[in-house]
Image 1: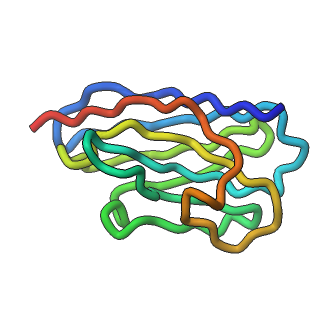
Image 2: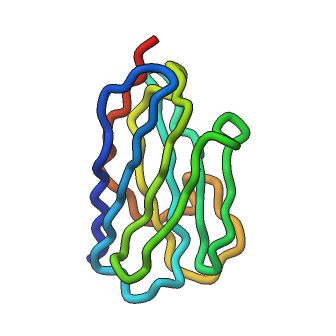
Amino acid sequence: QVQLAESGGGLVQAGGSLRLSCVASGLTSSATTMSWFRQAPGKEREFVSSINWSWKTDYADSVKGRFIISRDNAKNTVYLQMNSLKPEDTAVYYCAARPGLYTRLISEPDYRYWGQGTQVTVSS
């Protein structure tokens, strides 16, 4: 059974940084696309960033140049370094996983496994 556990959320001032972590258990292979999504109050969940099995990354336009996704396969962990945070980045951030050799997965239905989420709040 695959489980994803996010951590690293919190309260930060605008312009600050946070690093989110997501530890995956139960995955049998590192050939997995790992992603971050977020959901702000009153809004639909949206794609933030992904990293596939060959380390190819994708980013939403709203976070390009500010967020960096990375992974450590030895630790079954994916990270999201968030810099220059803005109040509009406030949301619950979710980790997602889809095993397989996919090139690009940026939609919610693409993902089979989800974490419980971690709250990120950016004050102005």
